[in-house]
Length: 78
Image 1 (cartoon, rainbow, N blue to C red):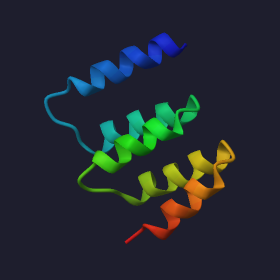
Image 2: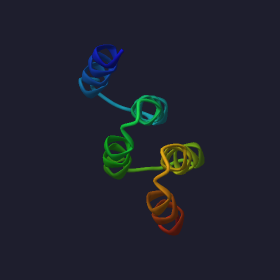
Image 3: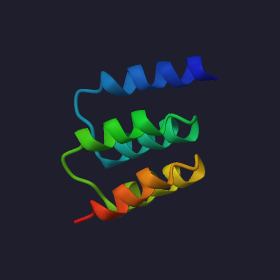
């Protein structure tokens, strides 16, 4: 399953342009597979965040018991 995730991330990175859907999908896939740090790194590279992505990041941290990360994400919301 992780090989499939790696392939999908590779494909997404090669997209000529990324929109909210592609960013959200990549971030969700990473966080679903326990890679919250990678999801956060991707989140930080985005130019424009939406409410769904903020919620996804907070839930990702909480799901993996990374409450400090969840609190930091909540604190950094505009």
